[in-house]
Length: 545
Image (cartoon, rainbow, N blue to C red; front, side, top):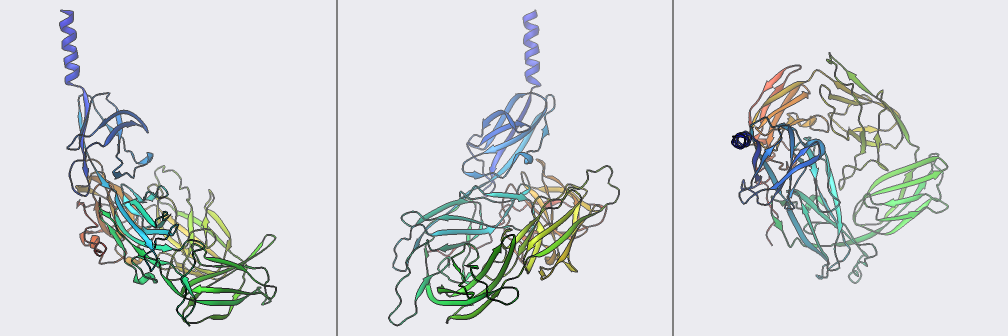
């Protein structure tokens, strides 16, 4: 009898045992993925592990009743989640939890760099530039070069560039996220330019854009569809007429500035020289095109700088004047206009970037030499002491603050940074205003498993860093975007951890699928959506060879 009782008890326990089952699908095809490693986590520690079968199904049995998070891993699919992305879900006594995930397959771009005679160019520098991709509550651009990067979900696509070099046979290949990419090639250091035609001008290698353009506006984007391999992306490195560039570096008082360092090029620097005792300088052979000239002097703790954009075309440039100026001082304050916070945690100001905008070949520079990282203290005060004159944009660097806070406005002097970049020519002040009276948008997003909902300002002028909102979908497609800045928005649900192409143009294909919603202060708005699953398919791939 005791044996029978134990057997019945075991059968009862097995009948009520907890389980988690689910399916992992290819976000591009909707088919199940075989061999995906699936882990159940507590915190960030895996407690159970299995793999999907041929139909993408998996199952965990005899689990302890508690809360778990889940992680998927596959070498053929890019995964965006970090430790903070794993949402805990409860597994109750006797329950079976059903899950679904959609993973995006890697794409691949491969090709060669050649000269005009078809010879391979080794060690040529390859740059792949594209917007950060919206995925699973974050913005990412990941490639097999450099390990990728990330940030918070945002309508503003982060301009990111990844760099590599060709091998000894001029070949390159990179595994990357689906998306639209600009490809450019720079000559390796020391590569001898081709000889000029008899009686012709000297030649110099220049940055070349796919498929063989010397001007960025003539370039073609390469559209990598999910899981695609684009091979034979050959780029013929171009040589163009070269001219001399001569000028003088002047001190702030107009006197010649000797021993100033002059750099030609923005990123990377192509050449450097030093001004002569009379302040003069020369670059003997500069390829036709747009260039940045930057002159610097440092005397003790004092730095002076001059920046000039030049257009080298059809002739030598003479008598350029680079007048050095001292840095500006910009002070600022992060202000919180708080309603009743209901014991919300105080706002902790996060860093901002001041980025210099200029030139047609590169519109945004990284913080550092041509910008600054603004780091407010705990009281929200900050001071930038080494900023030089120019047209700047300012935007948040890290994830938005937790609700109930939202970014309302950024003012540089008297100008509203939400609507324009700002010319900073003298000492000025910056005010960053956060508010707490935002609204919310909530609902169900059909087909949104593992994806998220993006709220993009309806006014294109407001589509700048910090002014969009987002929310992840749970396993049932439920979402809630909180602390949304009041105003009109376009709402997009993105299925799986799929990418979102650039959304700058009002006629962008993805925006045609958006729903309109008005967010009001302190109010919750219900909005049900259907997730977009193939946002890139309307873009044209590169022309066939």
